[in-house]
Image (cartoon, rainbow, N blue to C red; front, side, top):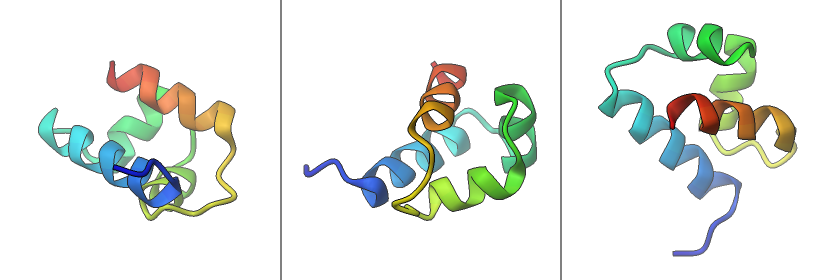
Length: 60
């Protein structure tokens, strides 16, 4: 699988749902805004990498 912003967003969305988290819950736990998380899950290519890594770390 080619890992690009869309694939990363899909991975995050699937893992969030697998853990039973709402976007607002994951955003709060990660210290990012809901809008950022929504854009990240949609694969926005300009999402900040540092914040994306924080979300990934929160998901484990």
